[in-house]
Length: 295
Ligand SMILES: NC(=O)c1ccc[n+]([C@@H]2O[C@H](COP(=O)([O-])OP(=O)(O)OC[C@H]3O[C@@H](n4cnc5c(N)ncnc54)[C@H](OP(=O)(O)O)[C@@H]3O)[C@@H](O)[C@H]2O)c1
Image (cartoon, rainbow, N blue to C red; front, side, top):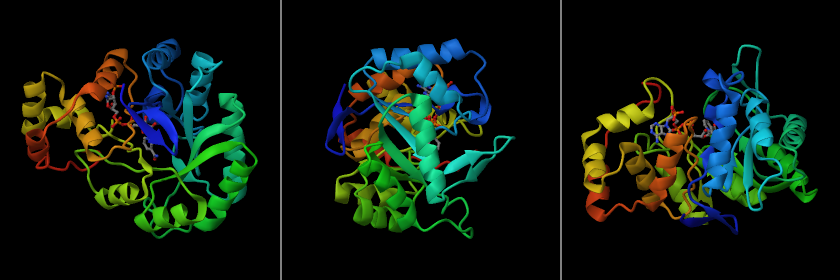
C-alpha cells in the first residue's frame, strides 16, 4: 500500500472513515453491529493504519464499535477523532466548541477508545455551517487542544470544516498537521485549501471523498459521469476507484478515509491505492461536472 505522511509519521494513503458504521445519519446503532466490527477488523487486517471517527458518531456508537472490534490496538494504528460538536436527542448536529467542552470531548474520546493519547484531534469548526453564528475564538479553541497536546493526551492537531483564514491562523498558532474539509472529484470548492496544504506540507484528508452518502449518493453520480466511466473502463476498475485515484493524483499528502459499511466496497477502496492515472486520464477528469451535495 502506498505511503504518505501525517506530520512526520509515515502512514498508508488509504485509511477508513468510520462514520458509516453507525445507524442512518450516523445516529444510533447499526442494524448489525457484528457486521460493522467485521468491517473494522478487515480494514486493519488489510493494511489500514488510519481510522477516522468521532464521539458524536452515534453518539458513542462508533467509538464503542472500534474499541470492541480492535482493542488492544495493533502497533501503528492511528485513531483520528474530531471535537467541537454534539448531537441532540433527535440526532441534530450542534456546535459545542467552548474550550472546556473541547477538553471534555477529548476526555470522552480517550475513555471510549480506551487510549492514553489520541493520534490526531481535528477541531470541527462551524464557521461554514453557521456563517452568521457566533463561535468561540479560534485561538482559545486551539490553545485548549495545545494544552492537551502538552499533557500528552493528543499527539497531533488538525482543523475541519475550516476557511482558508482559519487554516492559516491554525498553522501559525498551533502547528496543525492536517485539514479535513469536504473535497472530491465531484466537489472541488476547496481547491484553495488544498493549495494551502501543499504550500505548508500538511496533510489534506478530504471527507466525502466519494461525494458522500447524501441524496442519491456520490457513487451513483460517479458511475453516471461519462468521463469517470471512460477512465474506469480503460483501467478495468470501478468509477469509485477512479475518484479515489484522482484524489491521490492531486497531492502526495492526500490521505483518504472513504466510508463504507461493506467489506466488498472496502476491498475496492483499498485496491484504489494501486491505481495510477496518467496525464490523459487527468485531463479528461478535469472536466467532470461538479454535483451539489445532497443531490
Ligand atoms: N469532518 C467532518 O465534518 C466530516 C463530515 C462527514 C464525514 N467525515 C468523515 O469522512 C469519512 C468519509 O465520508 P463519508 O463516509 O460520509 O462519505 P464518502 O466516503 O464520500 O461516501 C460514503 C458513501 O459511499 C459508499 N461507498 C463507499 N465505498 C464504495 C464503493 N467502493 N463503491 C460504491 N459505494 C461506496 C458508502 O456506502 P456503503 O456503506 O454501501 O459502501 C456510502 O454511501 C466519514 O466516514 C467520516 O469519518 C467527516
